[in-house]
Amino acid sequence: MNLTNLHDEPTERALLGKLINDPESLARIDGLSVDDFYSDFGKIIFSAIQNLTKNGKSADLLAVSNYLKSSGDLQKIGGDFFLTGLGEYFVSSGLIAQDAERLIDLANRRRVYFALTSGVQNLETGSGLPEVTESVLSALQETEHKDGGSFRPISEATDRLIDELDVVMAGKSTVIPTGFYDLDALIEGLRPSDVIIIGARTSAGKTLFALNVALHVLKSGFPVGLISLEMSKNQIARRLICASEKIDVSKIRPRRIDDDTYKRYLHGIEKLQALPLFIQDLSSGRAFQILTQVEYLVKMRGIRLLIFDHLQLMNSGKSETRNLELGEISRAIKLFALKNQIPVMVLSQMNRKSGDSGMPNLSELRDSGAIEQDADIVLLLNRVSEATTNGMKDFLQVKVGKNRHGQTGEITLNVFLDQQRLENFTTQMESQF
Image (cartoon, rainbow, N blue to C red):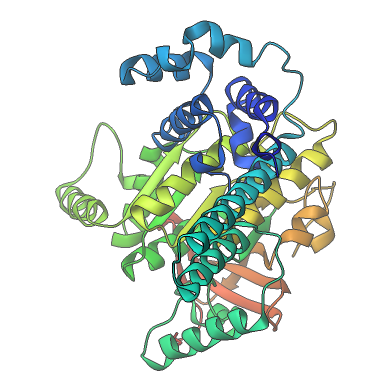
């Protein structure tokens, strides 16, 4: 076979052009690595794009050019003239996934070709047959694992199940408790790769619930990532401190604070600083760029739970309708959870009609039925006030509207709104995971 048929420079140029003209499109390709490029310019430019993205920067034309200048690689690829030429015919990045698949396929073919060629040469020089066979089979196995679409033997899945059982029997688990015992009894905690949708109408308690779950998870020693498109880092930190230390939010005033509250608040700050929480507050919610940056955070910081607040403030900037756009985003989030094997909690608003009250329904998830389809668990929230012997009391009703793993049902949590805190309604002991 002619080696010229085993690489495709025009496709390499086209893919790189799409990436530098639409940096967010990097999140749409999976499995492509620097080694899959045949050309030297492809390896250099793609490596620059990956490094910029890992550092939370947008890998556009100017950023890539500056990066290559600082690394001394710009002239190796032909200078700025070559970089600009990559995007000369750019129209859309819609087919970038197909471009990546073609480059991966050609790279796999080259690996097999070189392994077979080397095997023939070794046979001709008298090398042992077992060594040659092992080398060829190793190349084939590497190619098979590189190809995400390959059929896999069921033994791989059962091996993982055995590993999971061993972890549980050793007293450990990959499942993370929410800290709310009745809820954990229904959904059995937060599982790796699950997407958990938190649906509620405006001001019903979505952020309150998510931050209290985050606090429980953090205090259990698991790192948490929080993407907020609605609140600043300071607002989030203040809520977490008040919930943790049972401080009345109204007492945290900029001009006057009593000594006792000051000491407790300062103590709460010190405790929060020690927790593995990583927050990004954004004014723009470009979903694919956010997911690309968060993937690096997962790898570097070991994030075990990711929270998005909230879905309707995210966008892709691509689809013709809002329904299609949110469908693309929810699917991207699900693929992200699967790839990184962490639970992702996504807050979502509900469609609100005049006179709506009480617990919302699954059908009210705003703008897209794909949200429910991609979710593994959907929790619906409703905050109510009831008269008690001590006056009015707030409660949060949490309904498990969908659970891919089993039970549905409804639980109740005590709400201390002045402290931004939730507590278990029952006094039973915490479930073990």
